[in-house]
Image (cartoon, rainbow, N blue to C red; front, side):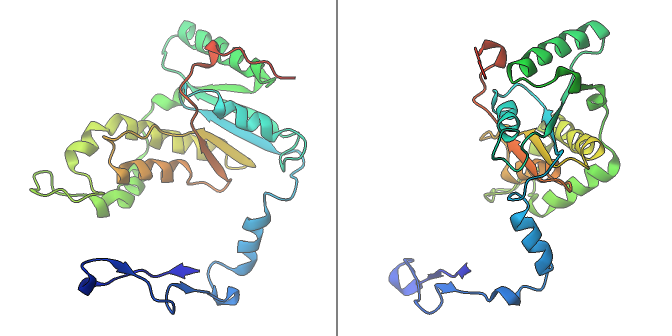
Length: 240
């Protein structure tokens, strides 16, 4: 179904709709690509229970407990991933073993609140490595149509300039590297749950959507989740 809205210039810029073109019903057999069978499989994949499933959680930063609550609830009765196995991946900011052990203990305490086996916690020091050139090229190709001149007199809404891209280089590097690790470790998972990047007013929409697209660019379904920013250690959670 598609909707067409026309602007009537003679009426002072007011929008008017024609009853004949407002809604157009497209015949279901008119869609040739992708194949109809693939479309139907994607539509019903969440209705059929997956036995011995696996949920991979990528905890990129402390953003509230929703990132861990969602996979916990999906393993309960009635879900298509009932009884699924949960693996948790997180990054470390420390370079010495003492700092890494402290972060591992803190994360294991969070997992215990959700009755998740802490033996499936994986601390990934590879986050510190820069993304490969191909990943950078894929990201630039997505956002390039929205690049504007740095010294342009009039800034078009929905664009960005080189200065904004440079100021966000560390965040871009982090999310691009996360996308590589997601594809490396979770290409065979049944569901990926990842921390949603924080959306701020100073982040241009093309760059932010580029991050989202790169994080979800893999075969398994990906759910990006962000909580209420409350630290998990401050919550007194009790689950049966």
